[in-house]
Length: 277
Image (cartoon, rainbow, N blue to C red):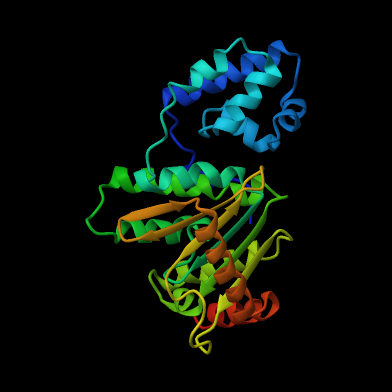
C-alpha cells in the first residue's frame, strides 16, 4: 500500500479552495513559519496542512479559526473562508459528515452492504459508480471517484487517529466486481489492517442476530472529544448529534465488536475469501 493517491486521481480543486490555500500560505510565510512548524500550532497533521494550502481540502471551521489566531491574519483568513465552495463528488446530505472525518481522533464504521468507502480501492469504487442507477456520465463517475479517493487519505494522513471497521462477511464475499478487482480489494483491506491504528473485523455468517441489524452506522470523536454519529439509507443520510441517540449507537457498536470475529480471526477469513477468488 502507498500513501499516495493513484496516478491521475488528484482532484480538480475549485478556484476558491486554491485562493484560500494561497492566503494561508502567504500569512504562514509572513509569520516566518514552515508547514512543519505551523501544523502543530493549529493542531493538524503536516499532510493535512499541505492539502489545504494546495487547495485540495476544504478546511474545517476549526482550522480557519486556529489559522486566523496563530497567524494574526487581520480577519483575512476568516473572510476568505466565507467564499469557499466544496469540490463536487459528494452528496449534499453527506457533506457535513465528510467535513468532520478529517478532524476525527476516533472513527468507527459498521457496513453491512459493501466494502466501506474509506477502505475501497479505485477499481472497486469505479465499478460501483459505473453500475449505479440512475446511470452517471463519465465525467460524474470521475468526479465521484476523485472525491472518494480524497476521503481515503485520512487513513494515512492521520496515523494517530484510531479507526475501527466492522464489515458483514457477505458484503466481502458478494462479487460486485470482476474477480481480479475483488482480489485486489480484499488484499487492500488486509494491508490496511496491518496499520497499528486500524482495526478491521468481519461479522461472520455464523453470527445470527447481532446488534447492527438496523443498518450501517458511523461514529466519530472530534478533537474536542465530542461524539457525532451518521446513518445512511438510499439517497439520504442523517448526522446525529443528540447525546442520547449517539450513546445508543455507541452501545450497539460496542456489542458488535464483541460479536464480530477478532482482528486476528478476521485476517484468516479475509485470506480465505481472497484465495477463493
